Amino acid sequence: MKGRFGVWYLRLCQWLARHRLWRPGKIMYIGGSDVLPAPLSREEEGELIARLAEGDQAASSTLIEHNLRLVVYIARRFENTGINIEDLISIGTIGLIKAVGTYQPAKNIKLATYASRCIENEILMHLRKTASLKSEVPFDEPLSTDWNGNELLLSDILGTESDLVMRPMEEDADRQLLADALEKLTQREREIITLRFGLGGRREHTQKEVADRMGISQSYISRLEKRIIGRLKREILKVTEIP
Image (tube, rainbow, N blue to C red; front, side):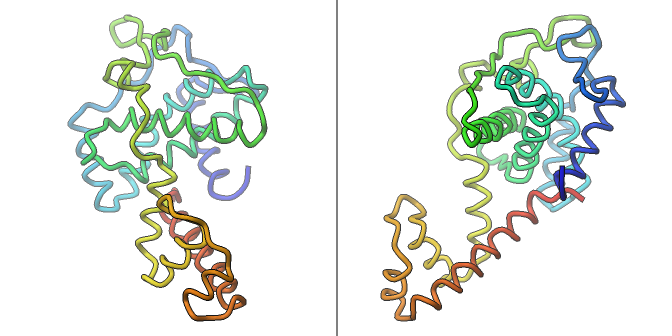
């Protein structure tokens, strides 16, 4: 693993090991007899989300840590794809980081619901890229036990009915990341990138078409395009970066 995701992956492995979830080459705990750590209360989560909106990175890290069980559980459902379980967890963690970074409580969607979809989407995206098999995530299988020894289902953790959980999300995390990054651009930069890549359902334009429309040379459009894409990447990294 490299870069910032490698650093977070190391933190994840340390956290899993601390809770007897991991040892090199093997993921443990899920489906076993051990008891899951207590989830955040509604009040605790609400307070952290409020702090997150103010840019509190400590709140972001806490929310991620308390939802890592979703990453481990969902990753286990994709073991039949031939991808190493540790790689699946690493990929799923990227989805969780994106989810926490783009979560909007005003949409009235629970964070765990939103995060589970983002985690699954990130893994499925990777599988599509590697031409691997897809796998569904059942929400009615026992995950572990709660503090009273009762079976705990994924739907219990999400706090909602399975049909609501499986309903397609209105906005994908990556789409929200891009939308937020676009807001950082100038009006001219947004127009160029929107025309070039057909954002918002618009038709894609060639560099020459954009150049003619903007009244500048195609070579200049090419340079601007590279610069704008670089800026978008930096803005997205600011959101997904974990200190």
